[in-house]
Length: 269
Image (cartoon, rainbow, N blue to C red; front, side, top):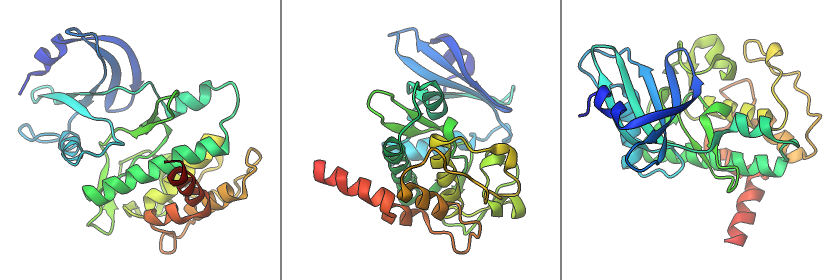
């Protein structure tokens, strides 16, 4: 396995993409051929001899050949400095950047296309490798603005579907937590993710008023930018506050909003 120093020698950093409390993501260019990648430099809390969980998860996703996730090309670990570097496939931008840079608001039709892709990718992760993303948000959905293809990234917080729930203390992004995660610190893989899908769909069209978000209470949401009743109904289905009656992830493709999109795609294909 490469050392971090030898891996870094093969790339030069073009610019910073994103920074967080435990990691930085940069646009990196491979010196050999000029190909562009995303480079993530992260702290590790693992023991001095184990491979970080995020790297293991990326290896599993690659082995399963899941198309809708960013591919890891190589990695290196610095056990002495408690850090690791991952070289990832690079997409043009994240969903937050795409939405915020638009001259006109995103349409519900385009939002439906994006959400339909996201749900299918999450289901592939769930069904093919038994994992679920615990940190779905605009910044972790990457998009090609020309083709509108989306991919998920950042697999540092993953729940095993075989477990009814996962302890989510200090994992993921607090403002995207479902009520049961806020109150009980529990993430239910097939249902807590549905809440995050609903927030994502709303956030794409009409930014979530985060200042009113408290303990998973979003009962006062307004829908000024929405014209489609099916889209509003979809969001209400996702944002059911009681996890016991909130639908499982696979049921979202059966909702009228996404089901219509699926049928149209099958007719055109």
